[in-house]
Every structure is written in C-alpha cells, then in structure tokens.
Length: 112
Image 1 (cartoon, rainbow, N blue to C red):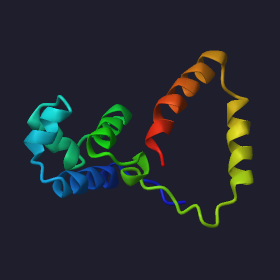
Image 2 (cartoon, rainbow, N blue to C red; image 1 turned 60 degrees about the vertical axis):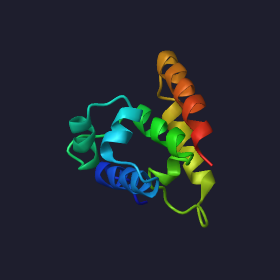
Image 3 (cartoon, rainbow, N blue to C red; image 1 turned 90 degrees about the horizontal axis):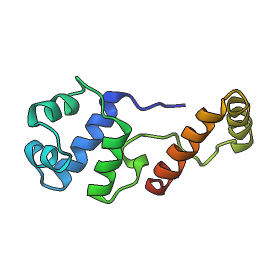
Image 4 (cartoon, helix red, strand yellow; image 1 turned 180 degrees about the vertical axis):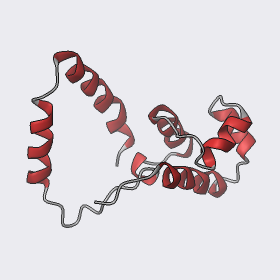
C-alpha cells in the first residue's frame, strides 16, 4: 500500500495553492500561519497537522484524499481491512474510542 509522506502532502497542497493562483503569503494568511512557518511546511521541513489539512480542503473545496494519497480502491479487499481495524479497535480504551469516534466524525465529511 502506498502511504503519503509529509513531502507528498506538502507538494499536493502546493499544487492546489498554485491551481488557485494563491501565493504562499495568501494561503498562510487564510490558515492563520506565519508566512515563514508556512513556507517551511510547504518545503516539507515541518509537517502539516490534520487540522491544517482539513482547513486546506475546506478552502479549496477538495476531498482529503486529494491531499493525502490513498491506494486505489478498485481491487481492494475490504473484508481484510475491516478485520484489521476491528482487531485494533478491541485494543483501545474507552477514552481512546471516544477520541477515535470524534476524529472520524470530523474527518469523514472531507472524504468523497
């Protein structure tokens, strides 16, 4: 499975910034970030938080999968993936499950 690296996430965000004819300064301002800090994010020197990725998706009206590269789902074996997730869920404490539920409810709206 191909996983996104912080660099590919930064490159995808840069691509959408440029497609929307925005400067680094303009996007930094929209994300309430210092311009120099944003430049470090885009160069891959720092990592975007999930909150900033969601904000970028909202600003550009795109899905999170446009920023975080996911493997193709054409030939995916979802039953195996579901079994893996269920096994991991069984290991979580109640507070961890609540946190996961909150995270899922917030991020799922940004997936297509």
